[in-house]
Length: 274
Length: 274
Image (cartoon, rainbow over the protein chains, first blue to last red):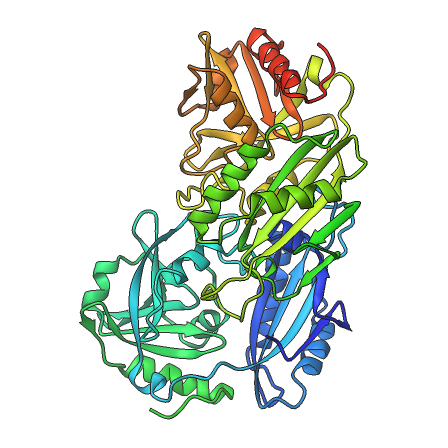
């Protein structure tokens, strides 16, 4: 549970039972890592939130206000995660969006999740999920509140030794993890799947694309991973996570993974030295 | 807004900001029409809710308890709608469902929506939506809380003269309205689209299928509607709604539509005589 929560700027832990976020998943969220009060990827989170609000026709977020509220809910925490949830607010029954929406803003602070000591060095064991992501271009890329696909995919396993599950779309193209984006080095080129039909375009992925020229965004088949020299996952909360094993295929974190982990440390995120 | 609400059996109008219904749309809902305290389609609503709970691995609903709570929230109302929302309850951050979920149960009573006097006689004007429904077999048919597609589709028009919008899937197959199921009479045969890849399998649709042998569930192309002799929409809240016009095509409610409206009146739903 969150340590501190502000709802529309006021301390509270409840929302209206008629909030469209609950009724229809009509809204967006961001989970943002703060280290000693600083969120190195803050502006990328605000970029995604602003662009997604345009796509869902939600009023533009007030980024300075969100920054002030985020600072309040993590006061005194060394390493924290802020979840911002933005919904279309309370509405009458029915799908039609209210003419003048009064969005609901939930800003909640949590301690950052603890990561096993050797995750950044040795990497995660990862599995394939049976759940497929549906192709829906008008929702693709956004971190919206319709996340049943991820819930069902994550429910496929309970073995704590498995750190993530990988998802394909209905055509069998590899898209992402349940809560991470995926990168692979193939023939010396860093590749990440296109997310214009499904998947969440992660903020950590955006940081990688901006900081490292030449990353290729393209379709990726599961079978191609077998000949990848490196495979890693990205998450704005967890950072750069090498994949150690995927089914029977074993990987060793290579120079691209290590360079991006180094970049992550340079941003100010604590990640145990390799 | 609802007149009366029970949350987990107690009068309240708020839910936890950490309810998985809000965080991820992790839950289901039903909207059930009651006339003088009786819900003629109650058992069909409970059937769908029970089957959907199995598919989402939610604990089975307690139907007698829901019936008692529904009766409380509509006490004294002549014509009412009860919305039951069932979520996976409050959870820690992350998609993984809690080992022991304590579902949240919202039971809210509303006055039934008023329908224009001649809707049942003359029918609705209907439009095509640009929004396409994504194919997702593991979610298809359920009335789950991930409804952004319907919200975006319904946001496509604001002309009150248009009563509903029709949706196709990505392959251009006709699926349903934004809040209704669709039926058409072609060559004397009543047809309704298959909903195994997307769409909500409505309770009114289930009643029609059960009461009228020989309805064909099959793919339907928009162009085929041009030669339909009758087109109508079904809704457990609104009943049997003839389509009067769809773009430039005009329809007149025929014998199949009228027979099903008669059946609806026989169930106890008030629908103005044709």
